[in-house]
Image 1 (cartoon, rainbow, N blue to C red):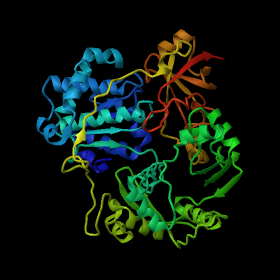
Image 2: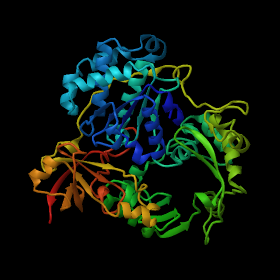
Image 3: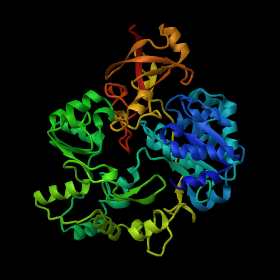
Image 4: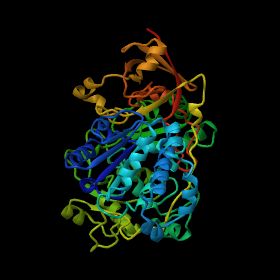
Length: 526
C-alpha cells in the first residue's frame, strides 16, 4: 500500500475494485465503513454485488475481466473533460500523449459495450474520482488474478498518476495483501527474482553483497514461480518440492494437474497442520504457529510489527527458521543463528529500506513502515510524497482484450473464484473451528436467476460444473449478486473451484493464472 490503512479516513473518494473488502479484509473493511459514515464517497467496481455495493455512492457491476477497459474509459472522460492534473502530469510522468491517443476510442459508450454497465455511470465515476481532491484506490485479486493482471494494475496506476492522487493523505494505490505476512515474505526475498526488499539478483553488485554476507557463491539465474515449478516437475526438470505454509492442492489452479506434479516430485511439506498437500508429502516437518514463536510480520501497509511467543510449541514443532537452519547445516552450509532476531538484524544490514528498523524501535512505535533507511528516520507511512520514487511515473497505453476462457461456446458461463467471510484461504485453520465451520460448512455456486431459469435450476439444486479441466458438484445458490452469464464459487474447499481453473495460461509478467475468468458449463443433477 502506498498509504496507511487509517488514511482511508482522509479520502474524499474511495475507489474499490476487485476487492470484497469487508469479507476478505474485514479490519480494513471496517475502516471503509467508518470513512463512508463520516462522509467519504464510495465507488465500488466488481462483477459480484459485494456487501459494500449496498452502501456505495456508485456501483459498477462490470463483466469479469474488463477492468482494464473500464480504466481506459474513465481516462477517456478525464482527458475529454479536462479533469486531469496537468501540472502533476508534466512534472511527474512520461507517456501521456500515447495514453491519450489510446483511450480516445474508449468512449463511455464503447466501454459500456465491453464492461456491461451504463455509459453514464462510467462518466459519473470518472468525474467523482477525478474531482475528489483526495481519492484513494484499493484493489486485490479481482484485479491481479487474470492473465492480464499486470496490465490491470498498471491501468490503476494510470488513474492515480493522471489525477495526481499520489503522495498525499487520503490518496494512493493500495493493494490489500491476501494473508497476514505476504508483504513480509516478499520483503525477505521469498520471490524467484529478488533478494530482500526487491533487490534484483541480476545486478552484479547486489549479488556480490549477498555473497560476501553469506559466504557462498550465489546464482544469478531467476528461479521459478509456483505456476512454473509444477509443470517443470511433470516435464522432469524439477525433482523435489519444498512447500512451507502453503496448500496448493486446494489453492492452485487445475487441482488435478497440481496433484499429479506433487505425486511425481519428492515432496517435503513444512506446516502447522496435515493439510491436503501435506497428506501427499514424502516428509512432513511440523512447524510452530504464529503464537508459538518470536519474530516480525510486515502487513499490507508495509508496517513491520513484532510477534511475541504466547505459548510453547507443542510436540516436536519448531519455528520455520530453526527447521531451515538445521537443514542447511546438515546439507553442508554452516548456519548458526540463535534466535529470530539474529536473522532480522542481519537482514537490516543488507537491506537499505529496512536499515533503520530495530526490535527496540518497533516496540517503541508500535511498528514502523518501510522505507526506513536510518535509525533516526521515522519510517514512511506515505510513499511518493516527492513524486514517484523512480523519478517519473510511466503512463502505460494498453489495449483491452477478452480472455480466451470467455470465448468457448461449450463453456458459456464465466466462473469467478472468490472468498467468503467465514473461511480463511484453504480452511487449514478455520475448518477446525466448529462455530466458524457451521456458518459455511460446504462448497456452493452462485448463479444468476436468468441463467438458472434457462438451465432449469432452482435454489438448492445439486449441479455439475464443468470446465476443460474437470468437473465438480455443488449446490446452487440463485442470486442477483452475479450478473447474467456469470457464476461465482469460493475457492476454499478441496474438490471445488480450483479443479476448474486453468494452470497453463498465465500473465506474461507475474505468471499469475486467470482464477477470475474460467469458462464453465452448468448442468442440473437433481
